[in-house]
Length: 109
Image (cartoon, rainbow, N blue to C red; front, side, top):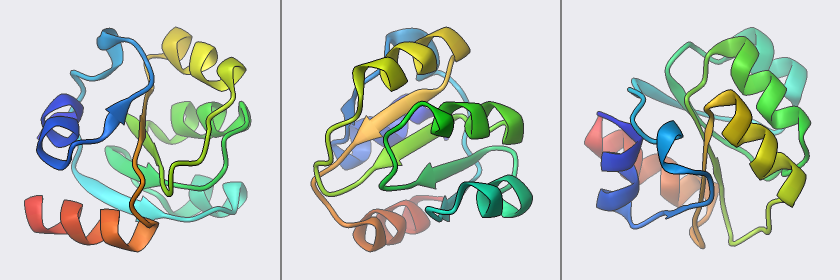
């Protein structure tokens, strides 16, 4: 499944530009400890986190995570969105909890 398909199916708001939403996703990972994500997330995972600072983009690039989802309507910093656009990482937003998002994605993958 591609990021844009996931966003459409689950009605996520896409915060980044269109060039980042055509990447494939293969799993889902939830964690807010960046070092843990770097050592445990898998290439192709969608990453759900409450963090919104620019460092999440660096972690996504390092692990080859195509998409970051920020739950509960948390506002993402503009500098993070700009950096994600530069790196081709999609950032999506949802008013749902991380748990609800993971359940819905799990049913789709």
